[in-house]
Length: 107
Picture 1 (cartoon, rainbow, N blue to C red):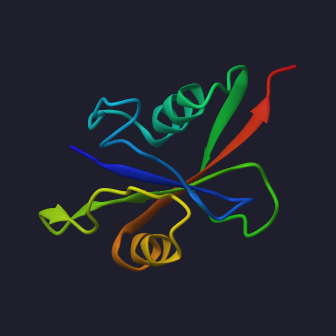
Picture 2: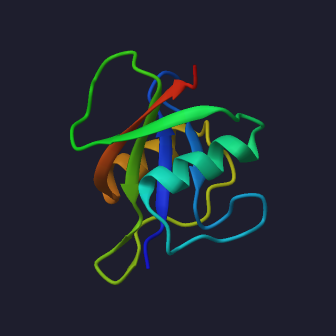
Picture 3: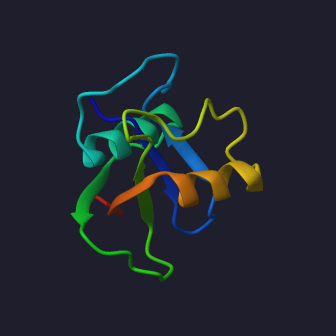
């Protein structure tokens, strides 16, 4: 049962948490599926998603995916504000980096 938190590569903000996407929880999905659900929750459709095992550290569109349920409990609590710098730092410090999901527009 994985809880993923997605941080947008370009803005650095938290864009989604599988514990609450449009009021629903998703714990049995892949990082790619989490990225798709987050995009759809903000009205973004028609994208292709590619999971990468590395962090691109560039201005590539996509999400850094962190796993919050580590060591038997959630490393961070609910995320009321995805732009809160302390919460972003807690995610990057206390959660486990899983992968990068690159996004691109379908042609």
